[in-house]
Structures are given as C-alpha cells and as structure tokens.
Amino acid sequence: MTFAVLGWQLFIFFTILISGKKAGWACTFWVIWTLVQVYGLPLSVIQFITIYLAYKFTTKIN
Image (cartoon, rainbow, N blue to C red; front, side, top):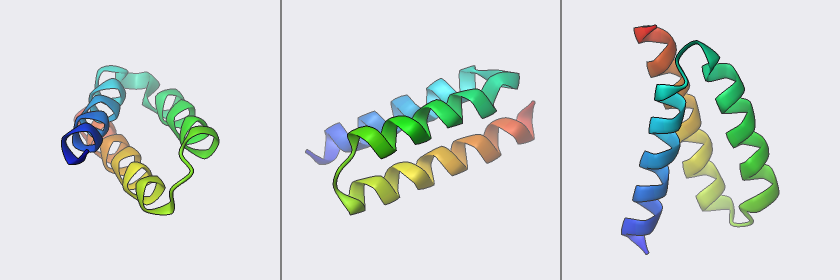
C-alpha cells in the first residue's frame, strides 16, 4: 500500500507540475478531489502537503 500511496502522490505532483501557469487551477481541483474522496486524516494530510509543495515548486520554476 505504501507504494500505491507514494505513486499517487507522484501522480498529483506531476499533474500540477505539467499544468504550468494553470497550477492554481490544478491545485484547486486536487484540493476539492481530496476533500470529497479521501476519508482518512493521515492520507488527507499527506495529500495536502503534496499539493502545497507541488504548487510552490511549480510557481518557482515558472
């Protein structure tokens, strides 16, 4: 299960990364998706951290 969670976080990170200037929209989508679909608090926290770091990284390179 750990590999599945890490793989999913990488998928989220890369979708935000490739969104470029639309990273804010991609982050909004992933935040809403997380609120609706993820029921476990630890998984939600990991996912929100991933979204935040991906956004910061993407805005820094664009």
